[in-house]
Length: 145
Image 1 (cartoon, rainbow, N blue to C red):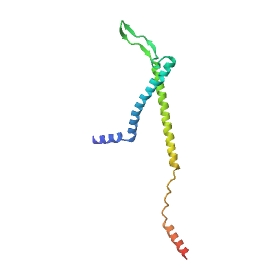
Image 2 (image 1 turned 90 degrees about the vertical axis):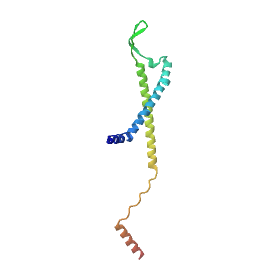
Image 3 (image 1 turned 120 degrees about the vertical axis):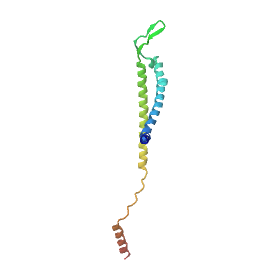
Image 4 (image 1 turned 180 degrees about the vertical axis):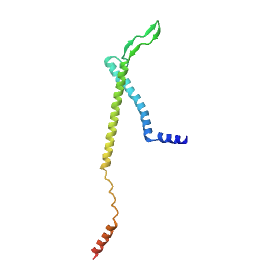
């Protein structure tokens, strides 16, 4: 049992799993924001222009069956307005993600250029071989004469 727990800890604490979990949570919150932008800001503009709320657009395939005041069966509708709203949600999310990824790529390329532009430290000269040390000593002795 202890081995299983250790393996699970190793799996759960890997960077990729944690990063993915954070991405899913942020994505859920981001999805709510985008849905609000579409439902509360964009779709009312379409409704103001056409006088129709897009999410209310539907085709009734079968009318509701009533027995006096009581509903026996609900109406069957094809809610294409909700589909339009979801497509607009998707497009806004895709555009936002494109802009975010493009910004990250631009920033990372800028940082890479700055790193390349920074002067690199000179590499230390390698230690001279025994032959080079010997030849240097011989040169110095000959120069003294």
